[in-house]
Image 1 (cartoon, rainbow, N blue to C red):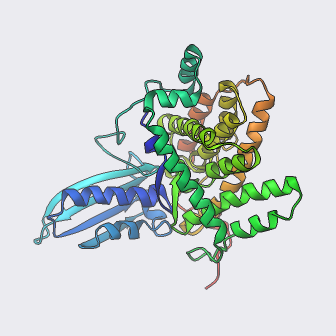
Image 2: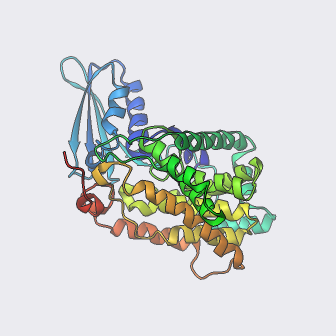
Image 3: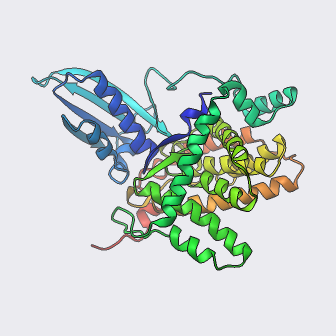
Amino acid sequence: MESIRELYRIGHGPSSSHTMGPRKASEWFLNKNKHANHFEVILYGSLAATGLGHLTDLAIKDIFKDFQCKIVWEPKIFLPKHPNALKFSAFDSNNSVLDEWTAYSVGGGTIVDDETETETVQIYPHKNLQEIMNWCNQNGKQYWEYVEEFEGSEIWNFLEEVWVAMRESIARGLTRDGVLPGILKLPRKAQSYYNKGKHYATPFKRRAQLFSYALAVSEENAAGGKIVAAPTCGACGVLPAVLEYAGKVYESDKTSILRALATAGLIGNLIKRNASISGAEVGCQGEVGTACAMASAASAQLLGGTIYQIEYSAEMGLEHHLGLTCDPVAGLVQIPCIERNAFAAERAVAHTTYAIISDGRHRISFDEVVETMYKTGIDLQSQYRETSMGGLAMHAAMPKH
């Protein structure tokens, strides 16, 4: 597996695969072809189908702002390697092709091409959670200690930056109201939920807090604000909400939060390696499902769970999102994405309770659920994998103009 630095990406929304990834790929191609006269970028599959709603074209044009750049949309053409494909071409003044490159935005802002499968070197020697659990048992270590063993102590400085960015996105989201960008005219709810929650009795108050934290980050993402992809922009509200909730309710200190972030990153990395975190490849189960598994593991660790209870909590986080489709209305990361973040955060807290009450033994392993999720995602018809051509995207009520 790669470093968890490649999983937690600090940047601007609304989409890690449709905004962050294409922007990064554009920067790479431009740096290689600065002498070119003009450019063309062809967007294929999901990138083309929901690119307008995800601001893909604006992200690309911003990089090529000093050049003429033509964008071609091909939503019905899916390249074999991945549904999020884009082809760059550089031309001279005579319109002769100088260079071409096909890239794939595979989720979480990661870019690969036909020659490479990952962006960076692999630093972890184990391939699944069972192997990692065996290592932890043999060495008397916790998951966060496993991360430190192979990432080095400098990982804590990085995770502190991640946590600061997460908390800032919560704080901004709780102070802003109004309408989110896009044709849906969806009003922000985080501030209202947070303020109403102050006046509720304890059970409702805590639930309102948890919802408001998730909504705050997700709404910031939908507005193009600065967030942390965890593991993606579309699912960025789940983990910060659960960690902030733990800090408030369980009085978890910063060191504990950072260790929980390390464990959550490990869970997300395993799903990224052995399945997918791309909604365009496996549906929303790969985004919100993964985020819920990460948050479930982090929360279980914060409550003192064993490595078995943490594994169980993470397994439930993914298992109970199996089959979840990605069908964003109008191609925007708003409906049903924002609410899904809030309810995934609530589920993560419930998974923790269930796992901690147990002794950690259960029949279906985390690794088996990861494998099942990937197979399920591949079996989903394409219209349910971030194309906005099926599900809610086709049948939800749209605003009248």
